[in-house]
Length: 84
Image (cartoon, rainbow, N blue to C red; front, top):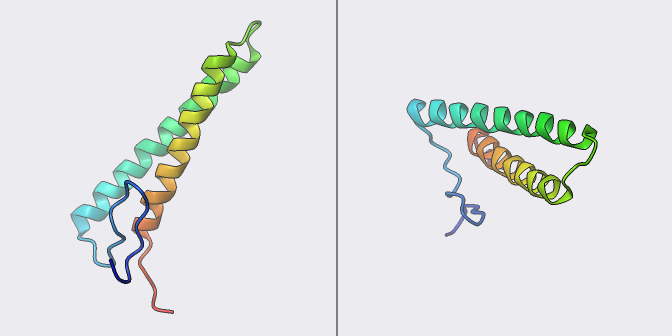
């Protein structure tokens, strides 16, 4: 794939997105950010509990990191490629 950057599981970055694709990516980004914030709240609540479940905390934090990676992938698709 010459000239295109591709991460594992991510589609190649396309410089020409349709308005529909842009709107779909923005909706996806909003959903991912909301889930990320919700996980923050759940993690904080669990940490503050009397007996936090360490395994559950680890799983939630791992999920939160995956969401952060997905957010970055979507954001990179929304940023147009610029010629250097």
